[in-house]
Image 1 (spheres, rainbow, N blue to C red):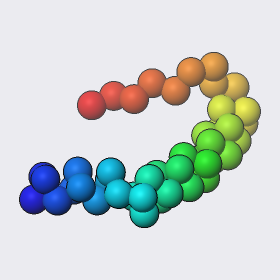
Image 2 (image 1 turned 45 degrees about the vertical axis):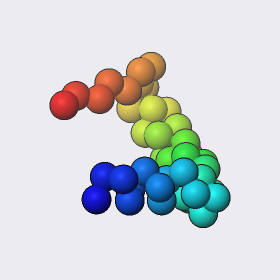
Image 3 (image 1 turned 30 degrees about the vertical axis):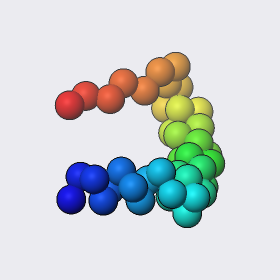
Image 4 (image 1 turned 180 degrees about the vertical axis):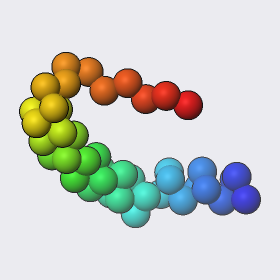
Length: 45
């Protein structure tokens, strides 16, 4: 299953989806950072 995921991500279609998602997320995080006066978003696991 892991190999299938990697193959999907490395395909041209997967690259286009990742690129599109990164563009969409930038706007959302920009609004959050501006509204809440964040300088850095920290991801916790």
